Amino acid sequence: MSHSMFDLLTRKALFTLDPETAHGLAINALKTGLIRGTTLPVDPALEVRLWDLTFPNPLGMAAGFDKNAAVPDAVLALGFGATEIGTITPLAQPGNPKPRMFRLVKDNAVINRLGFNNQGHAVAYQNLKARKSSKGIIGVNVGANKDSNDRTEDYVKGIAAFADIASYFAVNISSPNTPGLRDLQARDALDDLLARVLHERDRQTARVGRKVPVLLKIAPDVDEFGLDDVCAVSLGRGVDGLIVSNTTLDRPARLRSKKLLTQAGGLSGAPLFAKSTIALAKTRQRVGPNMPLIGVGGVTDAISALEKIRAGANLVQFYSGLVYGGISMVPNMLLELSNELKTRGITSLDEIRGRTTADWAKLQLSSD
Ligand SMILES: Cc1cc2nc3c(=O)[nH]c(=O)nc-3n(C[C@H](O)[C@H](O)[C@H](O)COP(=O)(O)O)c2cc1C
Image (cartoon, rainbow, N blue to C red; front, side):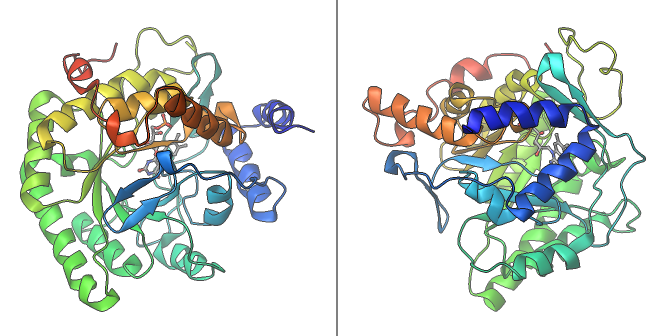
């Protein structure tokens, strides 16, 4: 059976199930090898070098799919150039009551209010330690427990716990589903958080013999002034990169899944593309050409991935797109990206990065 036929059938079957059950089945199928990637030819034009890492291609699995690092190698084997595990909090926590994840099928979108359901640092760390090979790029996305007395300290604990094993860190202060978490994006709170997190990273550098890059993951629901602050503080503290963006609390008027759009939580997938790309371009203008940026939000195919890069991203991530596109999506996108670059005589993604930053940055950060 062809991969796309398999996708169509599994998608049909999975879509009859509640989204979280389907997600659990997908994780299990990856764990047991029922779903497996194929070996892909490497195209040097797609390679991205950042910090001390070489990404074989710019497509990464976004945080939230493999929260507990149960299947990092199987995810990489789907063709991704990197996978970001988490968000992980120091202690295990159940998250919000179910149901808490919804498919907006007509909109190619998802709403979730999972609320950092995860098994805690220890389990994810053991899973990563148990890998047979240390090959592949695995980002570790860290967060804070809902009931923590000192949320900033939870991030510091994450850095300490995973420094010897993370390819890079993502500091997630932008989930809308932990009440008050996004307050950490305010200027003074963020400055304090980054000072403490980067101090811990520097302390760990001596222990692990490597300076692990620390990236900050931000929300798209910011205004121009909020973005000014986040960028100024990030530059001032020397953050290694930004991930733009997490899900949005907006419910654009054009959404067609009228019944589900009233569900609380973060919206992701196709309707997030414009907003997150505008935020990305505005971020690129503020941080200048040298800070690495990961563009995420609403990527559904090779063209939208390429547009993130043209808008200013060094790397791209997605999650919701995969829910609708299935596992043949990544190899198909890689092939299309390669062909597109070849046709246009482009030998490195550096040649197109930022081409449309100015156009995107002119647009408003509003919901439509
Ligand atoms: C079900 C679900 C769970 C998610 N969980 C996390 C998470 O734990 N941590 C995080 O930083 N982002 C999380 N995200 C956000 C994604 O990483 C991504 O930023 C967002 O969905 C936009 O990308 P997309 O449109 O390609 O899905 C989650 C998204 C979804 C759909």
